[in-house]
Length: 243
Image (cartoon, rainbow, N blue to C red; front, top):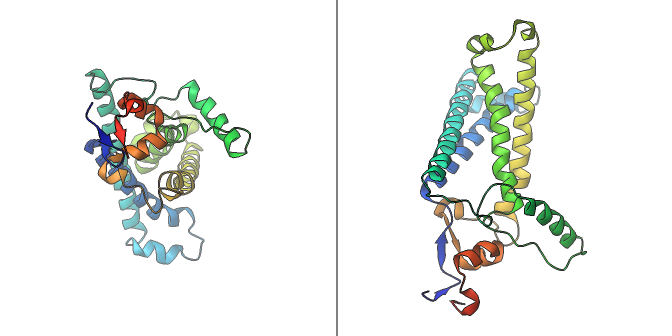
């Protein structure tokens, strides 16, 4: 293998994944901003905040367009993942898969023991840590609850046909609560979990650029994803890398 240095970069995410991610977080922000005043209209800042978005009607239109765009982006991602797996362009491997594995549970407990000083070693991660896997699959959970309830609320006349008649007195309130509260949970999760772990913690502050460039330095790969590093550079211990 050609000798490389730890300062060099390799591609972590291809451009299609980066585009999908940009669409996802852009629509997420639009949904959060326009939905906040609708959820808390009694809050003092709600009136001027909703005026920023053109008033309730315009804000509602933006909210619906952003929601449908997010669902289309999510569908594109799922279809593309199926395409990659079915054509063999993406292969399942224990050290590169995004699928949760028993090892992730052990990594979680080992990490907790390490943080409280009961273990001297940190867990070694593959391409995705248990934190990143939780990040990824949380989107699927959110899309099912927020996406479906959002469609029901956006198209009540059409959706009324899929519900039994005995539910029509309470189903709309249930959908509103599901949509509103799950959206609040998603906002809190993104702000305090995803942003910290991917951008704000020591070593990444003020931002990790991987979401834009798609690349990660070999040094960071070796430090953050040692199992993937060993998979990609099996001769590293033989001197295949230098500082």
